Length: 216
View (cartoon, rainbow, N blue to C red):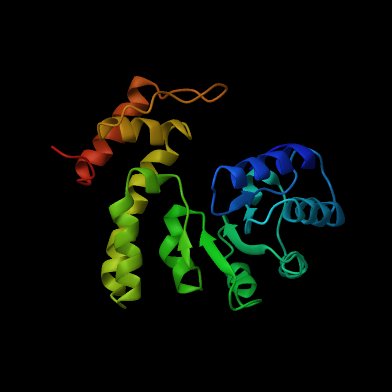
């Protein structure tokens, strides 16, 4: 959940609970530069307003906030904070956070380093490109569990080759274009996000075809 105020986030969390959600994932406050104490209180108020497990969402590239190990330790004092989505490349910090509590669930959020995150303790992953490459990520996970690191690395490299094409075009429109290429009518991004240009779309679909990600 990404809203600018705590009250709206609480409303959304309660709505999710009423709708049968299994958990809620919540970003720290964005736009306003609130301090650590305010962030802790934000999460405490949300957690106390619902019985659902709360997943802290760490994505400093978009929020501008770096989660420290000590900050996560304090957040884990809130009873229903049960997990973390870690969308960053600092897997050493992720590893240290993972060791804070045996039952803490940590999800990798950067698809291109999923295998690296698994190696340092992540329990799984949540990512954008999982939507159109699910077999790749399930394959990485299963190969990792089977200690078949060569196969896991092969699949991760395939994922990276696709993500590399995505980095050359415009953001969220990649997933929409990729899913449309797979035959799913998912529409176009909502404004202010834009659709891919014809050249951008061609780059994505051609890379999918080369990597064997789309049916022929």
